Image (cartoon, rainbow, N blue to C red; front, side, top):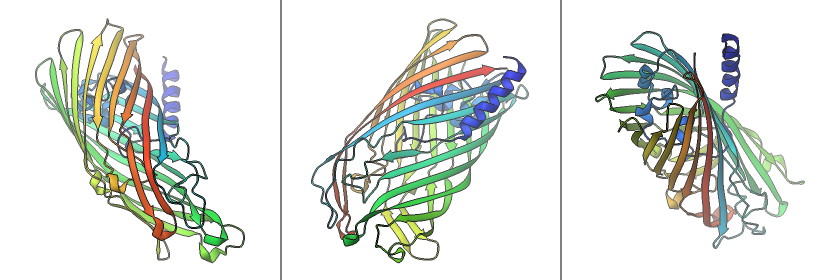
Length: 423
C-alpha cells in the first residue's frame, strides 16, 4: 500500500469504527469482548500478554512496546445470538390475552474496532483505539407474552482510547490509556391502559463518560510473558425522553411524554494473562478476568420534572472469566488457533429480565492467520457459545402487567475478520 491508499484506508476504518455497535453482547451481561479479530480464535485467552498486534491497546496498553514501527488494525465481528423463550406458567396482564412466546429475540449485530500503534522510540510507544466495549439488542414479537416487560432493547457505545507505553527494561513494560466513551440506549415495551386498550412506551437517552486503563507486561525469559491489566468503571448520567403511543380516547395526561434521566455505572475489570512459547511451532496462553458487575444494582428511570417512571431491581453479581488457548505455526505464512473459555453470568436467577436473559456460557473457538507479506496479515476466527438455559420469573401482576415465567434457550455465534498492516 502506498501512503495515499494507507491514509484513505485508515480514514474509512475510523468512520466504520465510530459507527459503534448494534447487536447482542457476546460476553456476559452486556459487555463486548470482541475487541480483536486475532483474539477470537483463541477465545481471547492471554489477552493481556499476547500483544500480537495493536489491539493490545484494549487488553493491555503495555503490549505496545512489543510492536515495531507503525501498524493499523481493523477488525469486524458479526455476532448472532439466539434467545428463544418457552412459556412455563405465565399469567396474562389484566384484561389482555396471554400472547405468543415471542420468537427469537436475538438479532444479528456488527462490532467494529480500529487500532493504530506507533513506536516513537525504542522505548516509547503510542497508540489509539476506537471500539465498542458494551452493547446489546433484543427484539420480541409485538404480541408476545412478556410485551409489558420488554419489546425492544438496544444499547450502543463508542469508545475512543489513546494510549502510551514505556519499556523500562528488557523485563518490564508499562502502559496507560484514557477512555472517552459515549452511550446511546433505547427501550420499548407495551403499556396496559386497561379498558382503554393497549399502547406502548419508548424511552431513549444518551450520555458520555471518561475512564482509564493501565497495564504492565513482564518478560520472564525469552519464551514466557505475563500481563496484568485494569480498565476503570465509567459513570453515566443518561438524559433523554419518554414517548407514549396511546390508544384513541386515552388522554395524554394518563401517560404524558417528557424528559427522563437515569444513572448507570459500567463496571471495571482486571485481568491476569500468561503467554508461553513451547517451541517454534506451539504457543499456549491463558487468562483470568474479574468484572465488578455488582455495581449494577438497579435500573431506575425518573422523570425530569419529578416522579418515577420505572424501578427495576437488577442486583447483579461480580463475575469471573477463565480461558485457555493454543496456536500452531504451520509455517511462516500460516498460524492456526484454538481456544476454550468459561464466562460467568452476572444475572441472578431471581432478578433475570426479558431485556437481558443472560446465563453462564462456554466458548469453543477456532481461527487462522495468513501473512500475505511481512507487513500484511489477515485473521479469521469463529466462536460458538454454549449458553446454559435461563429461567425467568418476572412478577408484575401488582402493576397489571402479568407474570412472565418460563425458560430461555440461548446460544451465540461469532464470526471475526481482521486486517493488520505495518507501514
